[in-house]
Image (cartoon, rainbow, N blue to C red):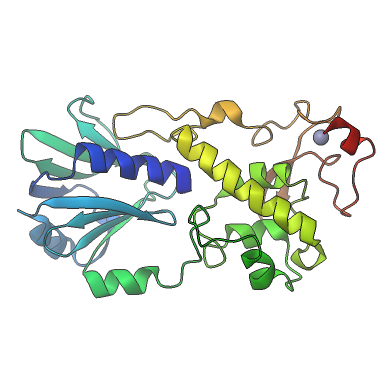
Length: 285
Ligand SMILES: [Zn+2]
């Protein structure tokens, strides 16, 4: 599922490869894709407009148009945007085709069918994005934001980090890696974290997301960039879907358990549920 680093990768590709192109026409192949406005109005407002730029907010991919409208995608589990050519025309699971000038086409395909899009004017866009939490890679995101925002909550830390109203862009892959780096069990209650643990969590959020961006995303199954290439960050994962394998930090084994309904991967030795430190951990570091 595309999280901050994957959407960031597609956004950069759109800026480099598609910005400045004119949309000659749009074809909606799966009407369930368009949440707003009607499919007819959606197609009409896209015809003849120029793609002025692209940006990302949380997991939203925002294509900026010279009409003042924004085409907002939520790629959900398996949405892929592919530029043809150079990519070969995809044959299945198509939801939308944007016919660009210069004989190029932008295909949206999704095997899982959950991708949704909206065409919004400036006011609608602002309203849509207003409830989202801060961007964790931006300068204004400081270590003490999370303890101030959620430090008194008795809820488990993992679902709090996945809540886009708390902090933007983190999903189920990066959160497991982040909690591993911070040595926090996913079921730890937010109100039990020490100042040192909040600082470790902050460092882990920044370093894991930045590495994901640098490696152009994580491809566990479906993620592809605009040119149909997988990311590389899957080669750097320590715990996500590594259950049954040795923990890279101790002699223990990574386990997989459901936490708040989500499959979660962690090392029960390095990430103690009671918050205690593993014996010998300091010597290893
Ligand atoms: Zn371990």
